[in-house]
Image 1 (tube, rainbow, N blue to C red):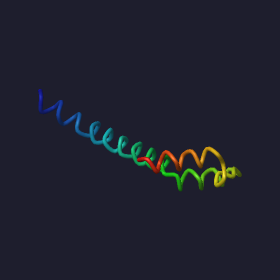
Image 2: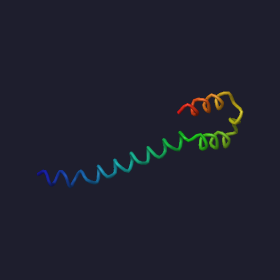
Image 3: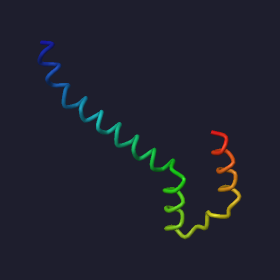
Image 4: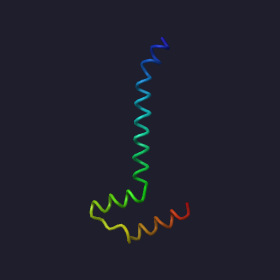
Length: 63
């Protein structure tokens, strides 16, 4: 019985692992200031001189 359950769960666990990796990669991309800036510029926003960008850079310098 345990062998059947293990065999049945393997594909589901493999799929969950792939999904977690995809979510992690997407989160890393969204956390990268360069990617965020590019996305904002594509939407027509000027983020290079904004106060939020300056604050973000100050915080990042402390990390």
